[in-house]
Amino acid sequence: MRNIPVDLSALAFIVAGEPEPKIVDRATGEVKKDAEGRDLYTIPLLPKPNDDRRNPVIVVTFPSENFPSIPEGVQVRPVGLAAFFWQMNGRAGLGFRAEAIVPAQTRAAA
Image 1 (cartoon, rainbow, N blue to C red):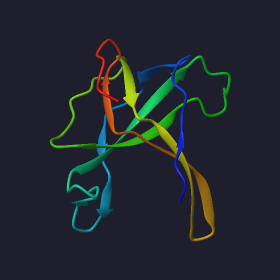
Image 2 (image 1 turned 60 degrees about the vertical axis):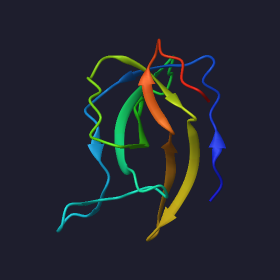
Image 3 (image 1 turned 180 degrees about the vertical axis):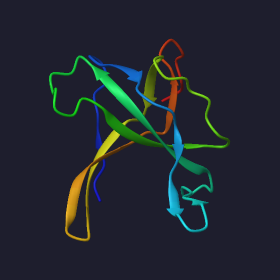
Image 4 (image 1 turned 30 degrees about the vertical axis):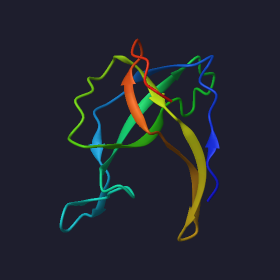
């Protein structure tokens, strides 16, 4: 699977919903982990500007040591945002992952 870096220079992102843990097994509630053992979460983000009125929100997966407290409506910056193509069980789509989600005014080491 190839990760495609996303150029964020002309984009801003608004949180469009609460972060949720990425669940491996709904029966047990087990949370998926990254290669470093950190829990993975998803968060819906609204990119601005965005001219796609059919599906303006993207869902980004990111790791966190503990449950992230990121309120809806705030502007954030996905650090290391990358897109990837996935295919499973006859379905396919475009996914997004980031190294971290930080407040827009904070500069994280990239």
